[in-house]
Length: 311
Picture 1 (tube, rainbow, N blue to C red):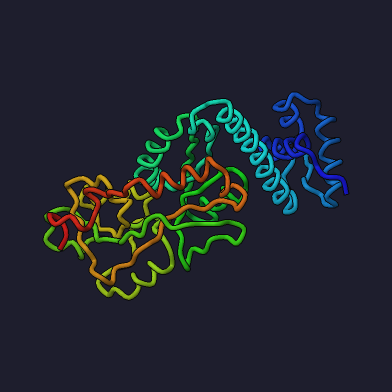
Picture 2: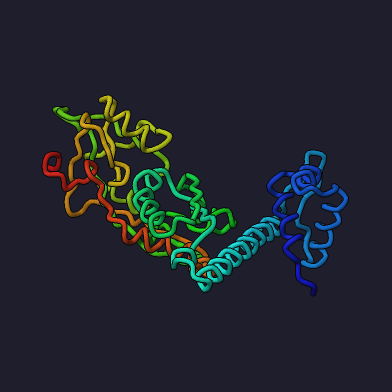
């Protein structure tokens, strides 16, 4: 069976991304008939219908979604190959060692990781490899989350929650970066914080944490659902309620909240990276993983080890 070439793969990605053949043709500088011909040819090669055609555009079938994901990943590997080859050639010609790591680096991260875990790593990465251009997208860590972005070829590496109740998809490789504990957060100086309403948000981790919550007789069911951890912290700061939050979400917490250690039995969560086996061996992804591991995680005011606020 003939293989689909890079041009055909780019057409698949464009049709999915633009939602139709005419819009894809415009973005690629092709005619609509050429795009249609390319897609039909790829469908014949793969033996599957890839798009449902309709008056309102084209939507990928289940087979098409899988094909587009693979197409993105293959095209990305071709880009990385070109960048690494150019870097190696430059180094062989007398360039600096850091010149071998260059090009775009697409990162998907959930909000608190993007705010507090990534910046010191990206700063370190920039010092070591100034030719790397990070592109960071914040993705909600619900459903397929950041791992789904990597699987779909939209990100080279994802910063994700990892654990037995958040298993890494078998197609990906992963590593843990931070093991962080949860703490009780409540308005500073409140005489009875455990009587306050419980504020929560959808990303507040795994069923493991939920099971711990269910065993705490003092902890009520959440009465308020917020959009993200920043909104939760704002509500707690204003005296509206209390919350149980992980350390990353508490970095830079205002002094209007108090952070109380929940003890040795407190729940924890693992935060790490996920990537594909192919990209894991590339210089740019390896460089970020090293920077993430080397950058010291200092949660600062959010740390429950802060003796001024721990109890």
